[in-house]
Length: 538
Image (cartoon, rainbow, N blue to C red; front, side, top):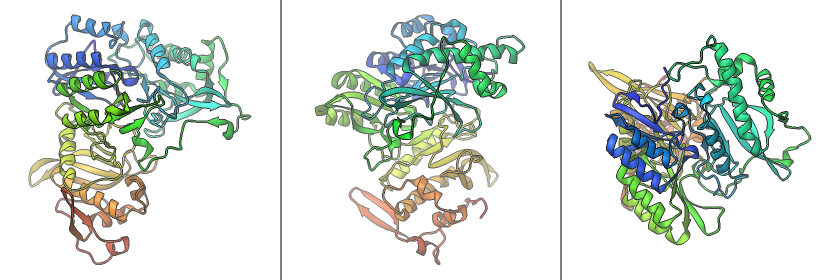
């Protein structure tokens, strides 16, 4: 069965049913935001979740959403004209498309063109629900590492912008793409996606015995058919559906003649978090502010307030991000303090170094039968605990997932926490495996450093890991991932489990900080390992 929810049909979940609203490029008007909030109040439980494809989910639906409500969504432009294709995944793009100082091309018109094609062609209904396309315009907020079947990456050759076609071959969760070497003019992209879809559909009937699968049946992914046919044969068949041959990247274009997006962003905070905080737009005297939405959940009263802020102080649009946050764009400089104050009053933040800025969690066992743990509640409890004990000066991506599927985040994180159940004194408790940094291509979540950590002990462990990182890193700009990648697992366990601690007072904060250096950490210090920690390999 397909697990992809839609708007015109609900998908069963542990907490009721859920409905997903496709939002191409993640861009919404304040009016649309209000209507979705009303829908979540009337049929859900008064909140929505921002997903890792910049969709919105309404959860805990106990009654079927009536046809007239769905027609209203169609009328305001946030529902497919043809319900049969609504199950297809959202078109992904940078949330700063058209406003990014460094982008090579504004992809918004391309997204609109492709979405219009998809949502008006009923013959695309048999496509895999996971059929997905992304446009990266080459700006400072890149989505090229997000998981998609088809990725268009903007490049500049001489003075012309093209898109390089990359395809997901399913070989690795974190490095799945192959660069086909094909270059497309922007106006050719929709036509080529259509041709890719036609070749997929032709071979889908072969895979399934000439029977087009129902949308709920398990359908082959695009990468499965690509691998079966071979990339070259697949692309040859794509060309048969085009009035022109596919343009190949030529060796005559040297690296100096080819620019693939921006890489020189002057900032003391990682480029990965340019979607959080206040940033200048390419439009003079305008800025956008990236708002931290803890674990992607927005109560409907917060949605209405944010929509009113965007309408009153900016252009009346909001942009959802694939990192479960949102942007308010087009803000005149004089209104930034007002908006910051209002965001704070909503219980939200705009700082990239806030512990919640890079905190990601899947639905958890309250809504998903596959999850071993209550990930969202645990993530928020961890954030509250850390808030009172430390101040970060670099973002740290902490990823809670209730199972190995990793639905909320498909890229590697600084700290990954994988839900498990633990038998403790004849009682079953929720806990986590702890992974850090990068592993090899076979290590999905990084390197496992702890196994079976009960959640009751997890906040103290994560605090100690972060405190050690901030005290022992080589430079203030060194990320947590860069820090841990320098050490073998056994050495990291010694770092994190040993330390001499003292209380350091800061304005409004009492913070526990390690005072040791790397050498002292390895010499005759008191073990602070808590009961219940089992270090894998120790």
